[in-house]
Length: 146
Image (cartoon, rainbow, N blue to C red; front, side, top):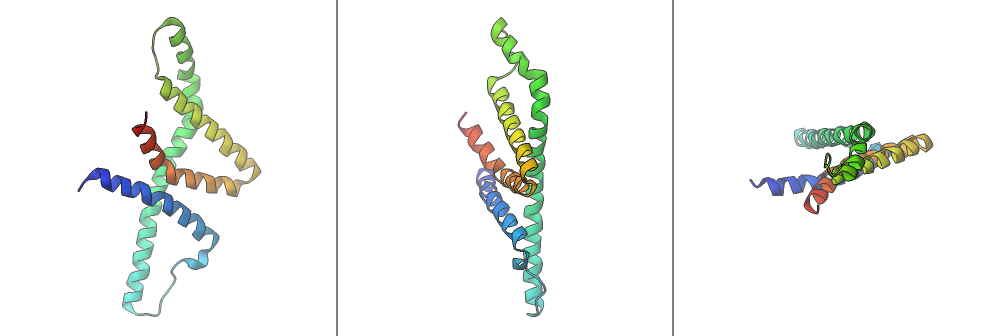
């Protein structure tokens, strides 16, 4: 099995699942409930719940990675961000400019999410779930075109 194709399939599926998760949260009546269709209907319901649980775990791991980078960005910029200035001044390269740029973007996203959470926490949670859903796809695009 080609890992490149399987990863791209997961990167395509995770944003769709994030949108579906938000839709299901808004309308919980669309979730499969009990069925009176016998054993086959019960298998279908359990299969749907297995897929929902599996994708929720993958989305949760992606959310943890996104949260780590967002919360670590101020710490990184305090410790290593100033080295970029001294590296350009003295001619010694300590950090990569793209790395510092990545953490600046993370800090801007963190501040934006924090401000949005103060204004509307529910909307901030929706934006974070969507960000966690598209994070692997954004990471792939950023790594491909750097």
